[in-house]
Length: 422
Image (cartoon, rainbow, N blue to C red):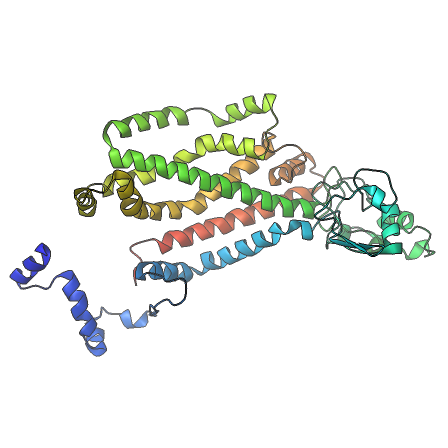
C-alpha cells in the first residue's frame, strides 16, 4: 500500500498497475512500442495448464526454456530411455529363461530359484545352460529365453577362442568350427558347414573371465546410475539442511559449522576407503555410506548463500512478525528459493557421484569383485591391451552417460536462469 500510495502521489503507476494497464493496451500499440527485432523472435504463448498438473507462469517459463535447449531436452529423453531399458536388465540379459513350460507346469525361473530335482537332477540350484537340463526341458515343454543368454556374472566355458574372446562377428568360421562341432551333439550336420552362426554370440566379446561384455555393460549402467542417484539425493538432503541452518541463523552457528566443514573436508577420502576396505569388503551400502560422509558438503555453500541473502528480506521479516516459527519460515518461504540452486546443481552432483564410483572400481577400492562395474571393465581393458574391445566399450558407455548428464545439467541451468525471460 505504501508503494501504491507513493506511486499515485508521484503521478507514476506502480509495477502492478503497469502490468494491469499493459494487458488492456491493444496488440498493435504494444507492437509499435516493442524493441527492434522483437517481432523476429518466436513467441511461445503461455497456455493455462489443464488437468491434474497445473504449472505456475514461472514454472511454465522454466519448462519452455528447458525445451528450447534442444541438446539438453533430447539428452534427457535418451538418458531416460536407456535407464528404463536397463531397469529390466534381467529380461534382456540372463542365464535363466523368462518362462518355462515343463510337463504342463508353468515356471518362472527369472523370479524363483527352482532346485534341479524338479528337472531330474540333484543340485540345489538349476543350471539352465546345462545341455542335459536344456534337452529335458525341450523334450517336455519349452523355454522362453532373454535375447542375451548371459548374466553379468555368467562364465561362458564354451568360447571359440581363449578369454578374453573377441566379438563373435569378428571371428572367422574356421575359428568357431571346432566349438560348433562340439556343441552339435550328434545332429548329423557336416563339420564343414558349421561356423560362428551355430554358437552363442558375444556381440562385444568377453572379459578375461569369459563373462559377456554386453551383459556387464547393461547391468553396470543400471548399477552406476542407481548408485549415483541415491548418493546425489541423500547428499543433497543433508547438504541443503546444513546450509539452511548456517545461512538462516548465522552468527556462531554459521561460524562453527564453517570451521567443522573446513576440518571435515581435509580428511582424505581415498585413505579412509583403503583403511575400511582392508578389514571389510565394501558392499553397495557400505561404499554409499562412506562416500555420503563427505559428498554432502558440495551443496552447503550454495544453500548457505541463498539463506544468508533471503533471511533479511521483507517477506521473511513479515513472517516473523506474524509469529511463524523459524522452521516453518525456512521450509515454506526461504527453501523454495534455495531449491533453484539445488536443482541446477543436481545433474552435476549425479555426474560426480558416478565418476567417483567408476574411479574407485578402477582402482580396486569400490564394489566387491564380480560386481557389474564399469570401472572394473576399464581396469580389465588396461590389463588386457590385446583386447581393445574391453576398454573401448567401457569408455564409450561411461563417456556417453556422463555427456548426457552434462547436457541435461546445462539445460536445467538455462531453465532456472532468471535472465532468460519470456
